[in-house]
Amino acid sequence: MKPRIFVTRPVPAEVESYLQEHCECDFWGQEEPVPRQMLLERTADVQGLLTAGGKIDAELFDHAKQLRVVSSLSVGYNHYDLPAMKQRGIIGTHTPYVLDESVADLVLALMLGTARRVVELDRYVREGRWQRGDNEVLYGFDVHHATVGIIGLGRIGEAIARRARFGFAMNVLYHNRSRKPQAEEELGAAYRTLDELLAESDYVVLMTPLTPETKQLIGRRELALMKPSAIFINVSRGQNVDEAALLEALQTGAIRAAGLDVFDREPIGAEHPLLQLPNVIALPHIGSATAKTRFDMAMLAAQNLVAGLEGRTPPNVVQELQ
Ligand code: DGY
Image 1 (cartoon, protein in one colour):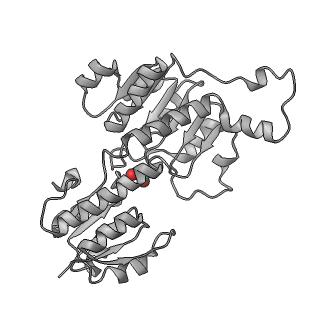
Image 2 (cartoon, rainbow, N blue to C red; image 1 turned 45 degrees about the vertical axis):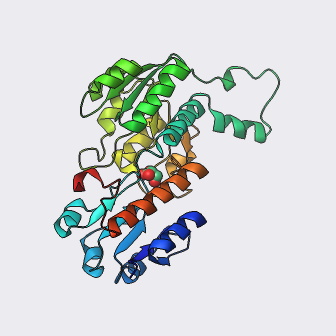
Image 3 (cartoon, rainbow, N blue to C red; image 1 turned 90 degrees about the vertical axis):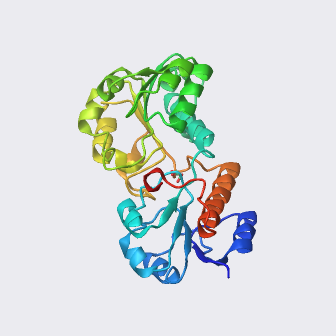
């Protein structure tokens, strides 16, 4: 008998067929996240869950007594209650590797977009404000040959460093839990303490996963250490930043600009004060959102789930549960 699964996210037809070949599938089938109560009901008798975001915790496991494998269609797995999963022997997987280059591309897009004021000046043209003789009002700042500081030099951080170093001749600094001698050698990345990195960088890029240690890692004190000319980029998780402190820093000119793909609450409301600032570029959490990468992530999530349900070790069990 095929194992039963609940799939909370829309997946491409090919992935759907693969899942149907191996499992009895219940697809949520809607773009909006599945409401919590519905999740609890629809997982009551499944062995597998394919999801992305939304708490995966003891309450869910109390309802889903047969659940054996949870596969997240994301590299981040801060929505997993790891101790509860460990205690019940539930396998948890994620989708690393396949999104690294796409996320790194987006970080560069935000660096260039904020530095050269791409969104702000697009509005300027559309609103008919462009006049012959416009000069300094259009100026931005250079990315090439500037200093980028990457906080969290994992695979994505390294892909950013490679672009920065070899594409834009940037000086690359990094801060990480452990030193990365290979990246230092191959990418010319120089290790700094967090405070040193913040003080020296023209572009501060936050790439840490969300953990109890990184929650609100960037707050008032850290923002005050940055140069007034610094640009802050966050494509990790909104909760890694004290958003009120960031807002204040952007409003008062304590830093120059921010490129944000993630927010404390998502979706962020249109009336949010951050969205009223011209020196902010805001995106709807699209770090990995290219057609190919999202296809690869969906297929990998499906393969992880099927492997776990068939009694094989899934290729991408999250580190803490290995
Ligand atoms: C991830 O995969 O964790 C990205 O943030 C996209 O959700």
